[in-house]
Amino acid sequence: MKQLKLFIIIPVLFLISINTAFSQAKTATKHTVVADGHPMAVWEKSVENPKGIILLHHGRTWSSIPDFDLQVEGEDLSLMDGFNERGYSVWALDARGYGGTPRDETGWNTPNRAAKDLSIVLDWLFKRTGQKINVWGWSMGSMISQLTAQLYPENFASLTLFGYPVRYDNTYPDDTQNGKPPMKENTAEAAASDFITPGSISQKAIDEYVRASLEADPVRADWRNQEQYNQFDPKKVSMPVLLLQGEFDPLAETKSHAKAFSEFPNANKQWVVLKGGDHAALLEKPRGQLIDASINFIEWLKK
Image (cartoon, rainbow, N blue to C red):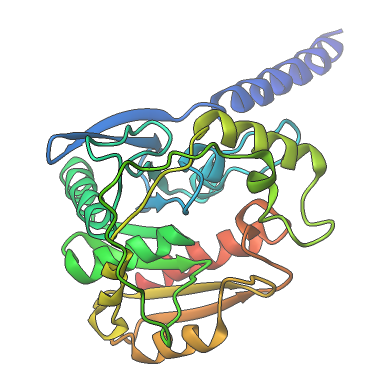
């Protein structure tokens, strides 16, 4: 009779544990960091006694929560949860005009402004945790992260560049705009546009990503002074660097990756191609490869 009771109780506890874990996985904690008088939203998912700290920077159109903490019942898609499972505390920054961070009085963002904002958040996070930070940037976020690494390298432990769209054979034209920002509405088509590899993600997940993206970022953020990206110089990136390239990513040019990789001066560098991955590989079937490569690189640096 005692054995029968034990058989009944264990599954109940197991189900409670699963439901609690799923519930906890849904919510990141929002912090506000003031950067030169402007409130910046920083999202946290931490673990006890972390092996390290990772800070994520989103891409051009969508903010941190849809990009890095997408919750779809029955599917593991959150990059923040994936890094937590490997023992790392994870933070994610919303740039000006994205997600939980409002636009400033100009209505515009610029590369230099975004890099300064990221440096201020890194300084805040270093003082809070006592650890240097592994900065992980996706798409335009990789560009902002590299610019920050060149201009404000002090609090970096490493730099990961994924979906890296820099073209080293191009010059960014002058982009001085003084009028009102256009503030165009974002669209469902734009939200779904990065999912280009058939069968790499479920329609249910795409639908939820579209919903979450439009909820977080109904209006497209506006940028100017993109000629500031002409400061890019891989020889000025002093910290260890991981280049992550999706096999089918149309924005990740192998020629530019090769130039950057050959010129990064720190010998602690890796270049990993994600088989079957495209620009949205962090939310698709290669997600496990991407997490493994990111964590393996950080832990390789500790040896």
